Image (cartoon, rainbow, N blue to C red; front, side, top):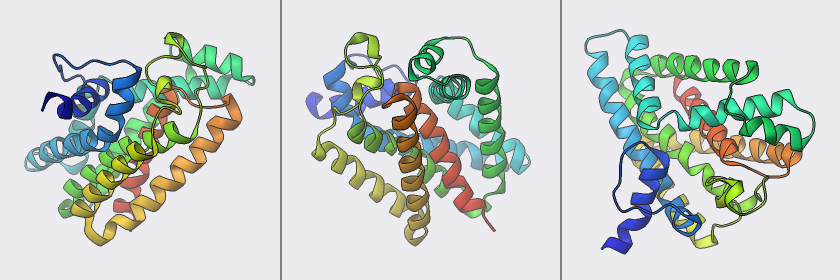
Length: 250
C-alpha cells in the first residue's frame, strides 16, 4: 500500500504546499510521481470549484473568481506563478540561452516577469468569472487537470536545458526521465477526469491543451535547448488559461 501511494504522495508534495510526511522527492520518485500530476490537478480543481460555489453564493462572479485564484496560488505556494515570471524574465530579457537560463535562476523578478504574472492572475480571474455558472465547477477541474498533465509530454520529449545533476533543479530532472508507460498512464488518467467533468465538451480543451504544449515546447527547445522547472510552471499557467477560454468563449 505504501509503495502504491508513494507516487501520488510525492506528486502532492511537489505540486502543492500540503505537507506529506514520508514522501521522498528525488530524481526517481519524482519521475514515478509524474503520472499522478493530473490527479493532483483534479483534486485542486475540485477544491477550487467548491470554493467558487461557496463564494458565488455571497459575492459577485468576479470577486468569487478572485478568491478561487487566490486559493490556487496559496495552496501551490505560487510555484507555477514563480515559474511563469522567471520564464518571462529569462526569455524576454536575454538573447543567448546561457543568459536566459542565468536570469531564470535569479530570484529577483523583472519587468517581463511582473507583467506576465499580473496578466496571468488577471486573465484567470476574468475568465473564471465569465464561465457559465453551471459549468464553472467542471472547467475548474478540467483546467487544473490538463495544466498539470502538460508537464508530462514536455518532460517526455524535451531534454533538460540545464543538463543533469543537482544543479539542474528538481523540475528539470524530470526531462527525458519519463517512460512511455508513465506518459500513457498520466494521459489515460487526464482523459478520464476531463471526460467525467465535461463529457463531450472535453474535446476542445484537449485540442487547445495539446496546441499550447506543442507551441511552448518548440519555443523552449529553440530558445534554450530544452526545458527547466520554470518552463513547466509557465506552461501550466498557459494551459489553464487556455482551457478557461474554451468555457468562457461565446
